[in-house]
Amino acid sequence: MEDDPEQDLSLVDVDADSFRVLQSHPFCRTLRNQVVLAISRASKQWAFTTKGRIIINEKVKSENSGLWILTRGSVEVVESGRVLGTLEAGSIFGDAVAFGRCDQQPFSIHAREIPVIAWCWPAVELQQLLKAQPMAKAIMDQFVDQQEKQLLRPLASKLIMLSHAGPEFTEELLNKMEVRHYRASNTIWSPLSTHASMRVVITGRVLVQKKLDGTCADGLGGLPE
Image 1 (spheres, helix red, strand yellow):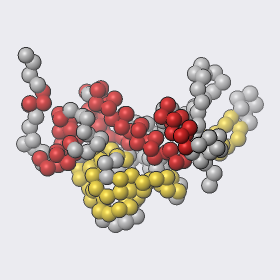
Image 2 (cartoon, helix red, strand yellow):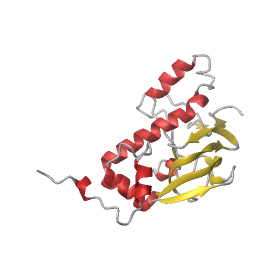
Image 3 (cartoon, one colour):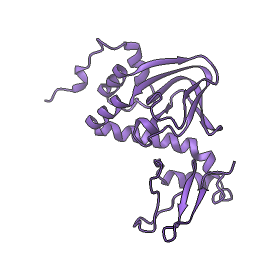
Image 4 (cartoon, helix red, strand yellow):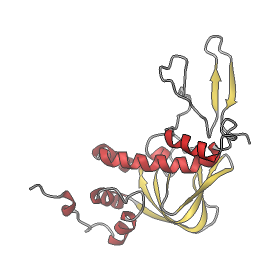
């Protein structure tokens, strides 16, 4: 009979209360205890007591580069001054950069309901764990994708192509779509692509370029101001 690695856990260098708080968080709830223990050891707890305090600034490459696990309070997700939605306790933020999906923070995070209590798991530590725990990565990716779809659903329903289709159609469509982040200058689609799929720009701006003569139209995509 093989030894259960869960029995070898030690909380000697970890605050037991911190471990239990993270263990009960929806992001960690389905992870193995040894993974939650690693998160607890590497993370630092932060408290923000000023409403409107900017926790993460969009378009910044390295500021607070980590995965934030929100355990109390709520925050606003802001893009270019526009509030996209609210994240409550039980959510995460900073995932786009922490998981390597973007080079820069796509959104700003502002403290809304205070105090905001969150644990910051450094991106370097996160990436090291993901390489060693591929099953944990799959679980985390699923949580991130589901949260992003919930956040972006109100925006998607306002798109011209979906605004008259009804909320049920939008929700059903989003559930079947994969949410992707693209770095600056990355090609999202080209005529040479062999993938027959639809791309819907929900946030941000894209450059549409005609390859033959170099003419292009800037700023297409996203929602109207």
